[in-house]
Length: 228
Image 1: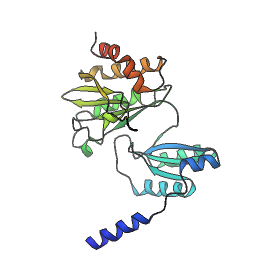
Image 2 (image 1 turned 45 degrees about the vertical axis):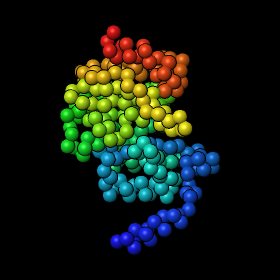
Image 3 (image 1 turned 45 degrees about the horizontal axis):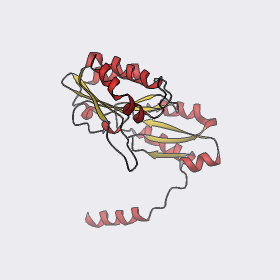
Image 4 (image 1 turned 90 degrees about the horizontal axis):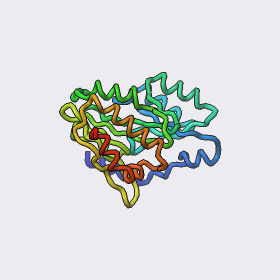
């Protein structure tokens, strides 16, 4: 086995850089990048889904992102057709519009389902809510937070029937940092109202970047999250 591992490593080191990136495709034509996932909660791919992604990679580009999604680059003339092809095999497609986008954990592949009902309610109420900029909301079903929700714009960490809320992460760059704790133990029956209020507050503010909004409005946000 060690021999094959070494051979595989050497081959991987020799792989060339990709020639079809989104930036290169966009420079040569009207290409759009779609965020595509196996599901909202499910992280496993089927053979049919893999076949579709392989075909689209031949026509454009497919890249795996740090946000646990595939970035599928397609020509804008094919957008409707490609979205139909993707949804036909039950892939979840996030439209390329500024909105709230939730990134859920995998609920330990179905072993930790206590938070699933409230997660589904949040998705119905919050997912793709129009905003001035895309806001990524991480949802973790337990305190392990294994999908790194605290590195997203907003993080909802479930435990014992309530949520801790973090916000304002800077996921990249030399000043990268996790989100700040904004509230602890918010009962699950209030979490949708709290998230909506926070997003509306952001959308009506004069601050474009979400982490700067959190930094500027942290005290007022903490007051209304606590119910003061």
